[in-house]
Structures are given as structure tokens and as C-alpha cells.
Amino acid sequence: MSENIRNFCIIAHIDHGKSTLADRLLQLTGTIPPDMTVEQVLDSMDLERERGVTIKASAVRMEYTAADGQTYVLNLIDTPGHVDFGYEVSRALAACEGAVLVVDATQGIEAQTVAHLFAALDADLEIIPVVNKIDLPSARTEEVTQEVADLLGVDPEEVIPISAKEGINVDKVLEAVVERVPPPQGDPDAPLQALIFDSHYDPYKGVVAYIRVVNGTLRKRDVLQLMAGGATFEAVEVGVFRPDMQPVDALRAGEVGYVATGLKSVRECRVGDTITHKDRPAAEPLPGYQHPKPMVFASIYPINPEDYEDLRDALGKLQLNDAALTFEPEHSQALGAGFRCGFLGMFHMEIVQERLEREYGLDILVTAPSVEYEVVLRDGTVKRVRTPAELPPREKIAEIREPWVRVQIFTPLDYYGPIMDLVTKKRGVLVTQEHPTPDRVVLHVEMPLAELIVDFFDQLKSRSRGYASLDYQFLGYRPGDLVKLEVLVNKEPVDALAMIVAREHAYRVGQKLVSRLKELIPRQLFEVPIQAAADGKIIARANIKALRKDVLAKCYGGDVTRKKKLLERQKRGKKRLKMVGKVQIPQEAFWAVLQVGGGEEGRS
Image (cartoon, rainbow, N blue to C red; front, side, top):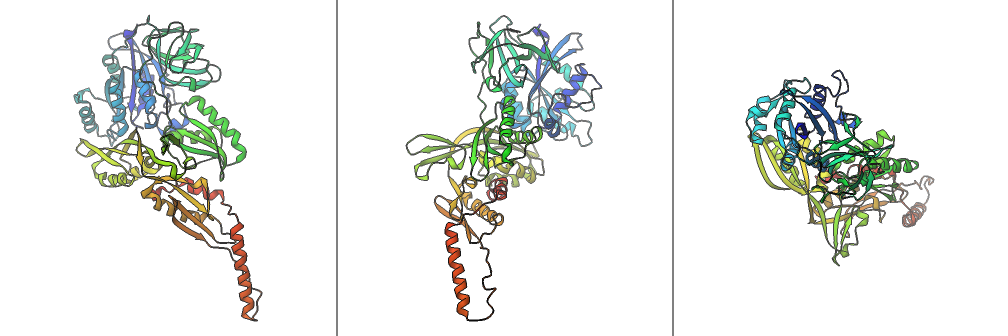
């Protein structure tokens, strides 16, 4: 039975035609009607269609009669296409034996193409190279075919030129999958080992786990156990995707499908975990399981405080389908009650923000993103810090460590200078560089994650006119020369405006913050000093001039001493007012400062 099964995925950079190719394969195999009008069948979310990127992994079972007359079961596992979801991609690759590598004939090889390719090669997958969009006038089919062949070390004849949109040569992709991808290995009589490569929450069936059965057989009503999570459950339903969920009696070794667990949270059924039988467990779980770890943190506040409970409910519902999203209540003196949320990366954060606004109709404010620091205290203990307010007093700190990442930047050679200038300004270090083709360069750079998340991607695109692309992986924590930058309004520190910055950037960021606040805080009846402080020293200052009442308006001539007396009394009153007066900082001031990302222009 498993001799006629082929498990494969499609890997590509964003917008290279992965979802369109999947649509054509579904139509060619008769899985969906040829006249079906919805494009990107496997991308069910509106956001996925608009942005041209797969956010959730999905799977579909196709039946194809090949040129040799035999009917094959093809399981296509559609992987997320963005760097933030690298772990999910790795688990989807582990569920396959082959991968179709799609490269856009107009764009050529991009950063995520190579990142996913190396991940597929590490997983020992058979690679089928495909050059897409050959029908476009700007297609460089021969040049890109040679690029792909050089990258893989194969004959250019093995690279299949196609147009997924027009359906040109798509049947050759199916034939190549049947011929080149090996059938799955596995023993249907061995103890059950099934890899979870994705899941979603169903209000009636609980968590539905998308699985690839590696060994053993899984049937409805079997009592199952998660080897890493430890949860025990009964299989409510077992089935396959065609592309909708269709129940079957059993899933055997080599097959791809789903199992409805009845569990109430995706957190209990994490991607990468291994399912086995409770009464006959496997000796060990499948390798590669990791706990998804948030890398970027931001606070989300409702603009209308009455929406707080609605925001809590919405985040809870999103978390049912997204185990990587974390949130905990937080209170700010400036913005009121909200939540501190953890995300896999900036793109993940944008998706959550848009879903909260669209699907749940919430007006929210998202603060500037930050990262998690490790603070080593003088007594040797290590504390994790996500906000400047959590930072211990300066005299107790031995060192502060910040997360570093390795970044691969693909760019045409023409933009080498401006991009290296950007890397240097962002505290990046060039490790190596290579030239896959004479006019393109790959830069391998190491840099702090805090510098990458604010506006690095936007500046990279503007400096390279949109041609450069990047991919990054987490390296670890390294000691950094970092300081807490505080803002004092009328000599009172304002927690919500504090931030952790590199010492070399503290002066510029402080100057920018102070001048921005000077524009935004309304004038008071007394002079208000705004100061930025780092390491206990004031590094920037601006004064908001006092509103002055014209106390001399009623003096028509007369002795000058009367005017002096009135001005002196006003001066004494303002001095007393300054000592007891409180400055009410409007929310617009906090929002404007937070939304400029703590002064990213000052950082660059």
C-alpha cells in the first residue's frame, strides 16, 4: 500500500507562486472541480490571500493516475512561507520525503528560498526544482534555470519550467513527484508514532491535530497519548483532507491525515509532538520537538478601556489556534490596562494585530516591539527582563545580555554599499559573503535582534529598491553595552516611556524623544522641563515654556514699582505652582512616541 504513496511539500519565497501551483495540482488530479473560482484554495484566511503568504500549514490528499497506469496517493503538505514560522516549516518538512522547490522566473533565488532549501536538504528530502511564471514578459527563464541548477548542483535539464497560472507543464511536476520522490518507509504493525505538523481548534471536536503516521496504525476510538505534552485522549475522529476533512477508518504508516483529540487547547497538542498508543507506547518520540519560544514582545492596549474584556476574550480565542502566542495582563500608568504579548517575530505580531482588528472589531494600540534580555546580577543570579520597568537597580547589575541573530541578506551587487552602511549602523557584524551568481551577493551578518525588529526590513527594502531579501535564525544571548533610557517630565520619571538601548545610541534616541515630547505635551501655567536620563546622568533636555497671563494689562501708567510688584507676585506663584503642579501627559503623546518605535530614526 505505501509503495503508491508520495508525501511532498512545496517550498518557495513569499509570492513566488506556491499557492497557485497547489491550486493547479488540485485541479489536475480532480480533487477540486476545474471551474472552481476561488484561488489559493489552501490559503483559507483573507490575510493569506491579500499578503500572498501562507500563514497556517495545511495538507491535502490527491489521487493521480500516472503515465505508468498506476494510481498514486499524493499527500501535499503546504508549509508556511515566512521566516517567523521556521519551526513549523521544519516539522512539515519532517513529515515529507520530497519537496518541490519553486523559484520565480522574474525574481530569481531569494533568501527564504535558500533557507527552506537547506532545511529540506537537512531533512534528507528529494528536491524537485521548478521555475515558475515563465509566461510573464519579464521572465528570465534560462538565466534563473541556470541559477537553480548551480545552487543544487544538477543538470539544467532537470529543472522544470512552468506557469502555474496558465497551467503550462504542471503535469510534469506531478510525474516528477511520482518518479523522483521515494515512497514512505514505516512498519504498520510497530508501536504507533505519529508526528503532529500542525493543528487547529474546532469548537465541536476540540483540537484537530494534522499528523503524518511514521510507524503503526491509528484508528478511531483508540486511546492515545502525547509523548512530550503528556496528555491522554481518545481519538474522536480520524480522517484525511480532500481538501475538506473526510473521516476514514484508520491511518496507517506513511499516510497523512488528522485526528480529532477532544482537547480544549492547542497548547496541549503542540506542533512537533509525537502521538502514540497509551497501552502500547513507542520506545521514544520522533526527534526535533521544540517548545515554540516568543522572540518579540509588545503590549496591546484597548483604545476604549471598556473593550478590555473583549480584548482578553479575543486573545484567548486566537491562542486556541496559535500556541506560539503568549499574553499576560499588564497595567501602564499612561495607557491603563492591557496585555503584554509574546510573538515569534514581527510578521507574527502584524498578523495577530490585524486579526484582532478585523475578526474581532477591536480598536487597539500596539506599543513598540522589544525583546527579552538576560540580566546577570552581582550575586550570580540571572533574571529575564521584557520591559525596562523590570530592570533591577543599576548597582545590582553585573551585565546585560541581549539576543543575537544570524541574518542572511540576498541582494544585487549594486546595493552592496548602502546595505553594509545599514548593517554597520545597526551594530551588525559581517561574518562571510558569497556570490551565487556574478551580479548577486549573499551577506552573512550577525546582529542584535533588537536592532532587526524595529525598522531594519523597511530600510533594507528602501535602500535596495525592493530587490534585497532576508532570512534570520536565533543564535543566543551575548553581553551588550546597554543602558536604561528614562524620560523625566517635570523631574518625575515616566515608566511608559522608558526603554533599553545601546549606550552608543542613547544620546541620539534621548534627543529625539525629548524634542518629540516637547511638541506633544501641551503648555502648562508653569515651565515644564523634559529630560532624558541614562546611567543616572541627564543626557538631553528641553523646556516647555509656561503660559503667561498678562498681569500688566490693567496698569495704565502710574509708578513702575507697581508693575514690578505684580510681576514679582506672578513669579512667586509660578514657582509654588511648579513645586506642587502635576503634568497631565495626553495619551496622544504616548502613542506618538510608542508608534515611532522609541525613535528608530535616532537608532539608524
